[in-house]
Image (cartoon, rainbow, N blue to C red; front, side):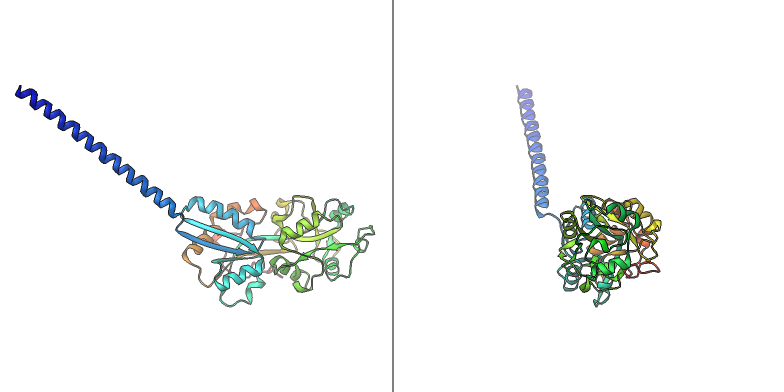
Length: 322
């Protein structure tokens, strides 16, 4: 009897021990789960605000989406508004990083640093239903003709060499302080304020304007070209009445291969006030190295050497901002 009682008590103690262990394990699992949910509720612990150029914005969004996959503690918000807004927001601290598609807009701003993150070509576009498209793609449009168009000295299509169509020409420009318009005006040896024509907001505004008007002409960054109801027109940049291969814009691949000599090229910039914050610096560094593999997805051109490209406002020997 005594042995039976001892065995019974032993079994009871074992059962109690197992039950206690189970409760402890369940409790630990619950604590871990609650801690995990609490951590998730806190969300990202680092934030970056980026604003500015509608040219740079599509690329910045692609970079953001890939970067946060590798850095789950980051939250990055991106807004447009044009290069002028990006520069102003960087200067006043409203943005950690401004975006600009013109280096010359940055040069006059004290304390700002421009970080070249990609290259771009500015493309002349017309409506695909314009009957002059075939001739324009063969002979192009010269720099001097573009100067006359945007000075309002050419207002009819039949005044453009190679075009024999008597119809009013509608040339679109930008209504916002735009790096694209600034770089385009620099190419034409004009100021942005001198560009004549109905103002459109952002690259999307000009593209939509040209798509909806058979007799329109405009200019956009290459991310907004090569698709939709538009045709890309080559530019005779040196007015020699001859189209060189590098002046043509057959497709993105052709532009990428000839960007070094393409007439209207420029750098695309991230802008910071002085030394960027640690989070901003890490993001910019990633964009200039690993992130360069995604540049082509929005039809821009990667910087040569990736990280080796310096934070300079002068891109190459022939500053493409001019």
